[in-house]
Image (cartoon, rainbow, N blue to C red; front, side, top):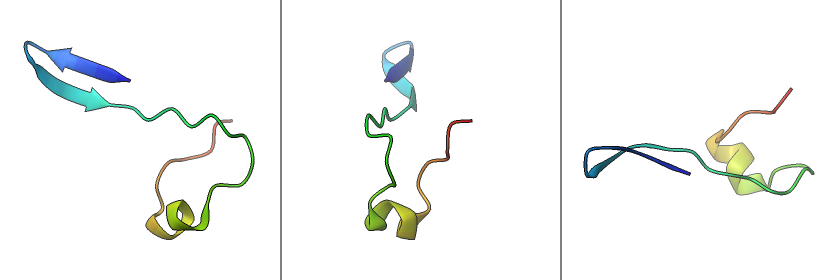
Length: 36
C-alpha cells in the first residue's frame, strides 16, 4: 500500500497474505512484525 504526499511516496506498507511462518530470508532480515 502506498501513501503519497504531493506527488511523492511518503510511506510504503507491505501486505503479507500468508498466515504461516515467514520465509527464512524474511526472518534473517528481521522484516515485518507479527499481527496481534
